[in-house]
Image (tube, rainbow, N blue to C red):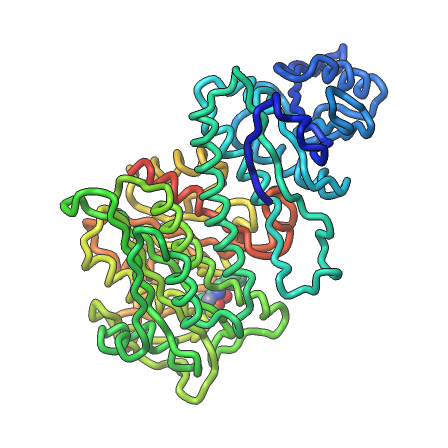
Length: 509
Ligand code: BES
Ligand code: MG
Ligand code: ZN
């Protein structure tokens, strides 16, 4: 899908753009019924809406759409109206959702090109024009995503994907803010959709080596520097966890390093670390076969971090940022880790591998140790780390762990702006006690059944220097199969969660 602009006077020159998109919102819903408004719309629009409400065909619920076919209005054949919901709740997230609803309605009606009344969309924007436009673009482009490149054309679900949405401009439009919003929205959506595609790609087509190559290819033409370490280098760098997990597979591990310089060299970087487990069979502690295919998504922490760095570079943020992605398979080859094996992390701590399926923390421990050596301003790691977080929070809230109250405030603010939900989970010394080892410093699973996400976080904490603010995000529940909870995310497949939140954190950094 393309998003473009067009002056309102040019609107009838393109005979194919026969559909006009208009917005409305609810101003009251009292005993007298639903009241709506639609400022800056064509004057007949409100009459159409009011009529539809009277007839009981429309109630202006959030994201509700109604198409007036053959309305023949102002040179347009059809008019599609979408509700932003309650006037008091209009903001980037309601706009994102209403544009995703438009995408669905257009596809359903086989409309491949439409003009959008930008002044109407922005009638409540005040100073937030760029943010509202970016959110609209995200709604369209994120909803447009479909991982169907391996499906023959005539078998694809979307038989009529949208070609172009034109944002109409008039003398009222704040063009510079509109352009800024379009650019930001496009960059974020492209990066998120790139991360989703990595997540949806199966293990045979996305090995650690390929993940490295994809990262290098995606960073071409940006200011990002990417390096990929192979097995020999990983071993030489004393990354015993990554090397230990990786040696169970013929497709060896990789360590991906990304660096972005947008500020003075003296300025400490923000650091992202992401679990890039391209397929998690569980290792010798093999997983049950039911839904094991889902473990192709076990690299979503890595893809989140890669996409966040791409977005930071493409937005040209004036910060320094680094990212590390330990990438590996977790397989059952003849050299695989055995339960009881002891591995030594880069920072010298030893770990008893009591369950080879708790491998995420083993590859992250080296990446976190390495990250600390770079002395960053703060470290954020993200991983599909535990099934326990799925039990606690399922697929709406991402659980995060930090002991740093300033960082907590930053995270909460960023997630609110980004429209992604996060929930702080407990991390205390008691959790740390549960993963003390018997024959090594640590063991990779807890002595108890409960609080598995917290004990995993406590394990990771052993590899972060106390003086560096650190937060850990467990996206095992929110990285895929959101089941239609957010209409701009696929019901099935990778969601691309937390990229918007991380970019917000970086902006505020
Ligand atoms: N990749 C899994 C975590 C996971 C589970 C992600 C379900 C998404 C959905 C991780 O490597 C794992 O296997 N964790 C184990 C840890 C346990 C053995 C302590 C788990 O959560 O069961
Ligand atoms: Mg596992
Ligand atoms: Zn895993």
